[in-house]
Length: 56
Image (cartoon, rainbow, N blue to C red; front, side):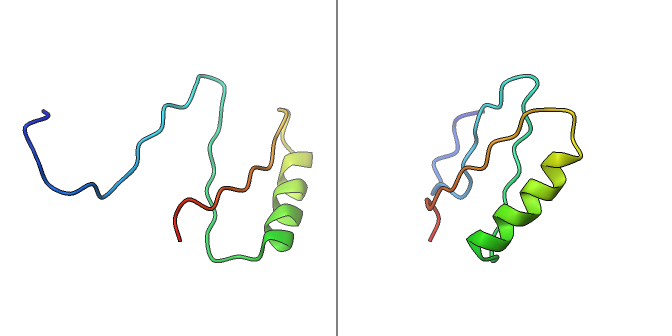
């Protein structure tokens, strides 16, 4: 529990309650936006499309 000094391999993010985090890789941005918009139209919650280029 904290004594491991190896290199960092994973990132951890705190996701607040009532939030869904979905990550997609290896797909064109325009296609990903279209897919997410289709899925979002069928979900009873508000959605937001965010592009983050942290991992390259």
